[in-house]
Length: 296
Image (cartoon, rainbow, N blue to C red; front, side, top):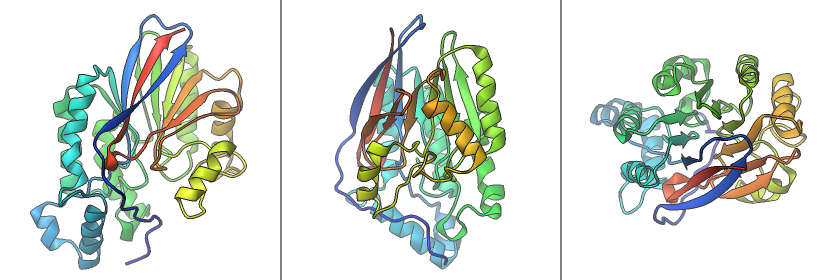
């Protein structure tokens, strides 16, 4: 089994504990409530998978299940509770920013899709680095061919970019699960500018901000797990650079808020152009966020 590119982080469990975040956007005609969940890391297997999966993969899956468990109950035990909490908050839209599942087992994918469907809440989903790969086949062409199509149904047909458009607002989900964005995704993102509406952008990996770097490195054994800029992943990639400059540097960007996960802690910061970026804590320990978008 090849070494995975990510580490386990067993931590004390606590209950579902939404953080509140409010933002005012000029030009809105109504208020919105969004419920944000990220990094739940469900780790379920079907009975067939539990017996037929290769030994090393099965052992890793079981270890991950334990890492994200409480008293023998995996993170999936919280999934329906999160859906109920989102309903109780009156969420207009559920924002799921990746790693809701820890690997693309049949069991995980079914639980994920069933929960979204039964919630009755409109949902935007963007894949994280774990969603579409097992550790022994991490982000390979094989994993992309086998597993990324499983998410098309809940990503409006395109796991790379999708959006929900309201009369006065767009909420857009952009895939940066490989720590970068690709040309086609960036081109489609820029096409939304033509609609002339403010944009709330959701991704898995946050954009680099200098003031977040120390906390990120402290949590992740010295690694800076952000994208773009000088210190983030793929800062010199032309498509990442184009995207980063448009979202984080352009003072006239239509993006009014960036919503992310991946880092496993709560953080609120301001991009260089003054746009807020929020990181929401890991779902497997109860982290989530209620985002209230109001009229300025």
